[in-house]
Length: 555
Image (cartoon, rainbow, N blue to C red; front, side, top):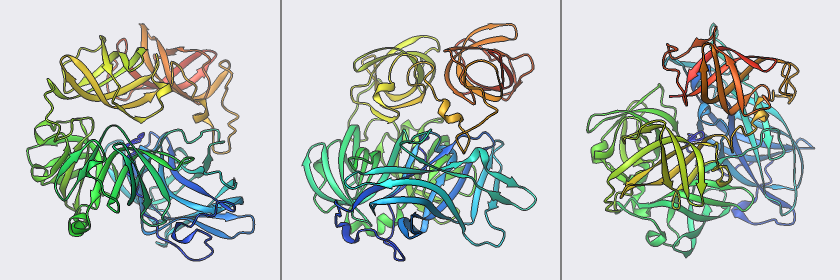
């Protein structure tokens, strides 16, 4: 789950919609109306904000209103779907897929649980509300889109955290939510989903089909390289479909294609009918970074969950007795991204299954010299399935920063981004293992850049797509801009960056000069600033120079 994950996460979001009544024209039993309807996939995304590290909200329902004002249900669940909005920057998390009648739609009406939880940059948790009277928050979002016969499509709700307003005196949050689709200024570029359903056919070792649990949409599933299938009843795992049977109830997580209605799965969990009690005991899931592990209890910086954790961290008990679908208790270490599933009673989480992202499958009998490693770097060359990285940071393995290394990505799963992004200039994070001196990547996340200085100026658009204070020509001035990049030179108070992402303006160049003489260093000191450091700088753009007011190290 991320960003972007997405990881994301992210909450990992299930297709847990309940069939609704009212004015819905959804197709009962999954009957196809190919001449008069098409599948519409609804995603949730977010625009980045520095004010809060985590913002947990619960979405209970979303309906599309046609030109006559008639409501057609896109998602409805009394329990709701929980999102940590801060993990959804440039990530589209699937909420649901439904058949909608062809025609024009004007509005998306969504209902949110009144209470939300916010964690600020200092780790303090604030419980806030949307409505003072305690009632659910109903928001009508202008959303002009057209459903065409035989043309599946995707739409999104962007919880624009940058424009959220919080009144600490009343505890009330006023949200801003923006409609997105593939024609939007900021399209839904990265998409992930967790889908529950039943297997209807098994084509071969890498492909099967399923019908979704509640709305009976048919999806095709392809196992991504390095994917794992776990049978919870036997605690066995496989990298192919050999453990699957027709009519198995499964939980599939991976990248989702709304046009072809398909999933590139990174993991599949089999829930046997005889496992109903165990399934209920494991219906809660959370993903995040390991802070500490004492051999039994794991402290997790939780980033995605299907419940509101109620704090900045989550204490996970019973880890030593849990089933590991990837990795093992001996491999657990601070900084790793893990997913845990188990029981949650509102205050205590007890793990039943654990997965270390990027680690080898527990049943693989790996003889890797290093079973798990995590490397962040900038791509300096690519030769088909091999990347050459300039190492910026390495964890769980001794690799010096500033050097180069080769990564085999032939069997890696591209968690965020596109294969076309894996070219020189892109910043990536790779998780995997060393075998005979070669680093084999299992999970790749594109952190920033689709090639050096790839344009992300679309992210700088205001809610209405027009921000008159922003100069986008690469000259002139702009009141507030942000740049993320790699430090190339340091000469006194003048720093040059190789741009990986920019917001609020268009620098017009891969290299930007920043004046840091009056900057506040968020991480405390200026001294750590060094060549090839990854930093984010905020300030004002004045005739080709970024006058910095804040510098933040990215690790």
